[in-house]
Length: 231
Image (cartoon, rainbow, N blue to C red; front, side):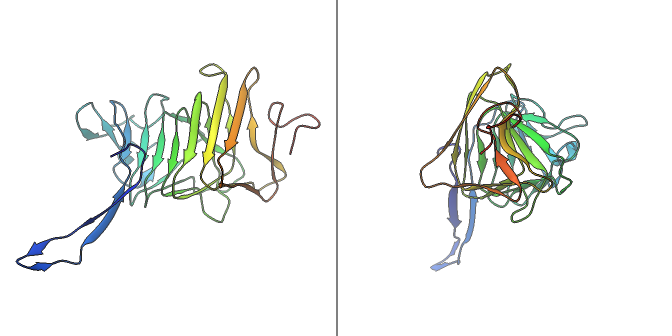
């Protein structure tokens, strides 16, 4: 199996010559490293009860104070689990994966973005955001080369670059249909939020990146300010 690829499985049982109708499931395999997180159950992002941690040989339940907030830890939201990104953020992760049947959102629509900083790939085979409605969830994309891909539904408030220390240049490839939505007065959905840096975005062939409501895209400058730098 290839890490990061969604696989569908069907399992049958047999008694004598009679076969069951079978059950179906799906999953996205990924290599796990010590310090990576996966969901144990639905809950808040900064609640240790939500998480399990890979200790190098097995998944163990997180303990008080353990929850994802490191650029070296990859995070997976598993099938059947919904995680609310609560608190002010930003929360750092390496790679972020939402499996089929999983959901990641803030469940708030205040117009104040809550950020997850991603330093590798973002894979959405489930649901990110609140499909069809505004959600405060936003992303800092700060790896050197990152991708947004998957077979699920992706909606967020903002995508921006916010770190020029780890990587001065970030290249993001959008390889799935995605929607960026804003709820308050006109503001910027995609931009570079830090000086002395470059944020390159490529939209893959056949894919669509949509901005809705009053959002816009900054094609140069910092934070979408200044004349002639919005599109």
